[in-house]
Length: 461
Image (cartoon, rainbow, N blue to C red):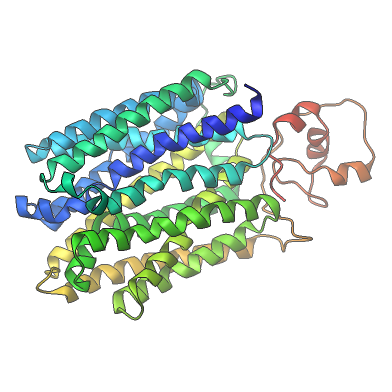
């Protein structure tokens, strides 16, 4: 098997492993009414998804450091095994404390899993095409969320057996994902850099563009996932009068739109750049979506599709750009830091939304009680829009279709072998994003290094 087909095969296996985790995460929303019948409150259901994120607040960064130390393939297999254990405990589900414990274990594994897989993909596609590969990874993985939302329809016989059976179905898919992760570990070529002792000052030296991207990621996730994966199906049933199956199909349109839009954004980012502009466009759609959704001013399919398109810019733009800004030997640490703050935002937003619904008695008898939740999500989405606008404003205007995201990182590889002409140097951009006239001399030397040409992801264009 040649190198090029292998990396696409590994991408498919990585997407399968992540798809299983996405399905299991989203398996709570379709059974929310069954859990209410069991005696659980809105806050209890919010806790099941909040506790998924809670362990990653202290552990996400350590998980990223671990990925840098043992390699992405091994870390992915280990994390996928934890996902399987957590899904089984959740499916057992009695007493409720065991169900919460299962979601906690699943959260530890799932968040580390996709960080490890993202690091692996960054290595497999270091020669170019990273944005498209990452977009396809998330697009294929989100088929799991689409299947989870539509499961009350295509798996109606499973749901007829009660709330246990759908969770066992999710656990079975996690088993398949674990097998895929083991294959990834077997065929991973060990692209990780030589292990270095972690210096926490390296985090402070990350470029300013990375911190812009980090906060945008946190805000997007804190709006999107708590609504879409926790409260959306319940809201569609209580306030819009849909059945469980209809609500699941409606909610699935979010990821159906993302499945189609994410690769398109990845292709645009790889071929033409304009990453900051793509982020601004996605951030603009999100608050508009929640205003329309909360006021019932448009059909549900319009708002759910808008939400899916808005969130598609995250995998297509944010993750690949992070891989360009951060040295490969610190990429796991950078992704772990992003995941730490995302987990904090997810946990807090889930708990706030659930508490607001309980406080204002949201339910089928009082649909207006959901208004406070929509005010909360709209406020967060507006802050994300402001942050995206500031990020876009901080970038240089694009020239000839090229992206000009700045970075203050120094090039990790330098050579003193013979000088090239300035004209030749201008035609060869450094993979850290240095471009004439902003290149330092070290970037010129780095860009002409033969090893750099093989390993650089030169898609910042």
